[in-house]
Image (cartoon, rainbow, N blue to C red):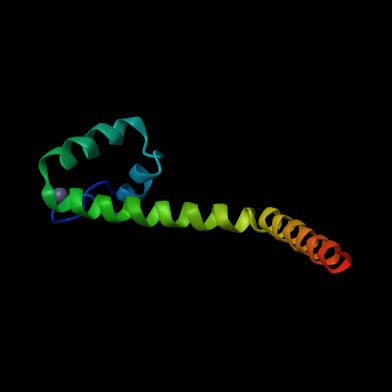
Length: 89
Ligand SMILES: [Zn+2]
């Protein structure tokens, strides 16, 4: 895997790995060093970080679907109970 592209900027692969904290230590310091002095790569890296954050949130939302489903069904049965008792009164 290349850390730097031909234009001497950080490659997409390295950006992605760095954003996920998956970059090998030997390469990590070179990427951090480049980010500290290159506005262009800092901007790109921010985008990659945001993209990964969105992906992680989507993955979390997916795994919490059964939970939120059981929550809403509890709420529905409660509403049914209230409607029933108010009908009796
Ligand atoms: Zn750069």
